[in-house]
Image (tube, rainbow, N blue to C red; front, top):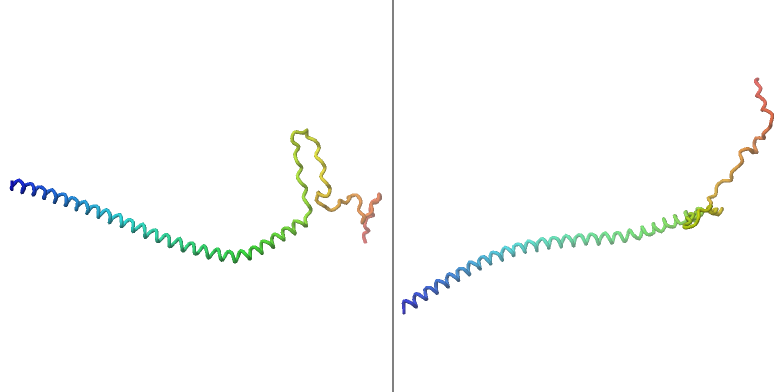
Length: 148
């Protein structure tokens, strides 16, 4: 019996040591894979931190630009108001433009209605070419100039 128990205990011991070694080897593999994952994660974290720093710097620049633009915006608003006032003054000095004739839909084509005279652009009154007050017209030919 002693030999049987001794044999059994050695088999158990060998199996246990084999299993312990397998677990240890497995844990070493697990440990290595964990280390690789940690290294990858560290790289990603470093990259993320760099990106956040760049983003913060960009946001700070944009904030400075906005402050600068607001200061310049006040000046440009005054300039815009001046331009608008000038355009309004120029538009009010011009004669009003006639509204375009509306097409007749579903009706027979009729003669267009005459446009109001006030809406027509003002031009210089036409002078008759036949009457010129400076030179009176006569039926006799003009006398020839005398040679001296």
